[in-house]
Image (cartoon, rainbow, N blue to C red; front, side, top):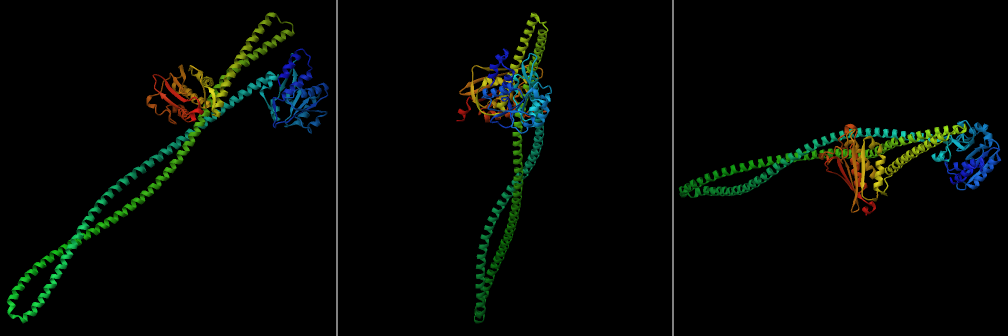
Length: 624
């Protein structure tokens, strides 16, 4: 598309190309830098004017520039036709400039590109042709009118021949977008602070709940201990009661048998006594003998009565033992009721404990969700810091380039004025040319520097947002990360050196690697180096058995060995009073182990902090 302009430029220099053909060529190229709200199958160009040569040039352009088309041309005779005609580009001849207010009212918000010539009122134009002091053809843009009509403009349109004002507007828009990015970063920081406050409040609630649970656990343990003691005493008493009951039962059985024998003997004695009474009357002679016998029997009866009293005492003892057994059974019933009560209380405590556990689980889930949000916020804050640094770094070369361009414009204008007044001397001409060459070199160097910064920032920021695995050269990529952090590094007067003996092409997540080393460098700048004291960071890259080893070493104040087991814990920081969240190294640990399938560890060193990062050279091979 640009090739037609390159073909026409030599002809323009020789003034063999008509001005109408040049304007038609520009119009054909405009369609490549303007975007309509909806895709167009063809572009409708309407011409309002009486210049037949201009109309013919537009037709020739539509036939010759096929890659920009297809174009469909129509010629209007009066402004009223604009309202009833489908138009994408409206070309108004300079002879009809007095009709522009009426045309603007007809167009209103329709997506129509209005092209005019020699119009002084910028409010009435979209793109306006004019002649420069050198009588060359150029154009001006009214970006606000074009945006109002729903048209999008590519910034590269100024390369076709736009004015310096358009270039300045493009730089101003870039500065405005950088300012919007800074405001977005401030809002993100406010949101992070608010979330940190919420986390602290939730952590306080969790601690209170934990204390209550600990108290309940202590009471529960005491109840269990008391229950075990009571249960042991009950088992011992129950065993003793069973033994005593068995002994009493055996004694009762023996006493019962003896009592039956005594009753039998008494019955026999009574029978013998009746027989003796009957024989008294019949056997008077044997009375004395029977009396002696009776005395003997009475003695025996006395002995037996004494034995019977003894047996009765034994029965009373057995009855007493039975009463004691009944009391033991009553105590057992009381103990059973106590156990039932304690079991019921234990069940109630278990329900309360389960309720507290559920509340803790919900709080933990909320804490995990908040931690994920904080990690994302921390990543965006890191990207915001890079944006701020790159914006500051880009402003310097762009400012130098604008200053040099302004100076170049001034000396060129003076040179042209002296040439027209025929006051130009060879000495001044040579001096101005040297100044122009010097200014051009300044502009070129500063624009190259800005382009390098933007390229590094673009690659690093895209990788951090996308988190897609791809193949890249690790040393070159870490250099781009360092360039994107140049503002923070230069402000702290830190030197960063990357040491590598060979080129390593890896297949992994460049955005994750960028996030890890951005956090490590920012962590060293924030915690490792004192203010106004120069420092050095050394990054050494090597390969061993398809594993990439990266040693990160700074010569700052170092990390206390007692904190070595805590530095990768979430929210652990020694600088919380300065606004640190304690998530930087935790994010590095999680990203290295989960995304890179590697490891990060803190190694002992004589001075400063020494981290070693390891991950597979090719992630696709490691996953298999």
